[in-house]
Amino acid sequence: MNPEGEVVEALPARSLPGNAIVVSALHLAALAVAGLLPLDAPPLSLLACPFRAATGLPCLGCGCLRAFAAVAHLDLRAAFLANPLGALVAIGGVAFACATLLRVCGVDLAAPRLGPSRARLARIAIAVAIVANWCFVASRVAR
Image (cartoon, rainbow, N blue to C red; front, side, top):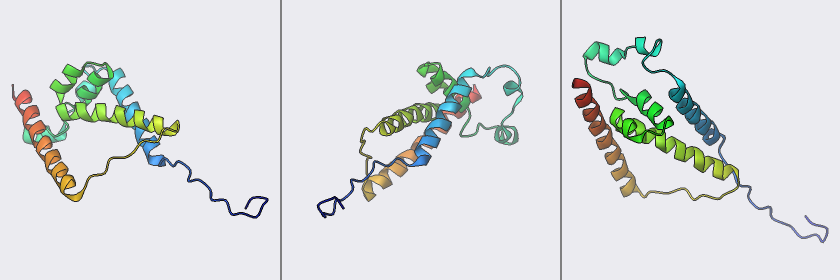
């Protein structure tokens, strides 16, 4: 209440979920580490993918570390050649971190909302993209 006895309604505070800040920080840290690590020197060159060792096929994440490292070095061509979906995740994470920073600074960003039919189409498109990405990675590893 104010001094005149009127009820004053508080304005809603801009809220930013704490997990958005944590996810942004973790993504940027992973990108920085991937950019700094020597990928062709031990210990990383000694690590083998257990899925590939067991099946002879690349896993869904095959090439993601190289894609993240290439994005960190701003070499988008190499990132997309290593793993297209990994490159999109790296770039999308940077965009998410930038949007989170803008929200922390007070910029009001509207979150996109999908209706049920478009959400279903988006899920199908994501599944197709994952399969197509795996086929691309498998064809590159087989060479």
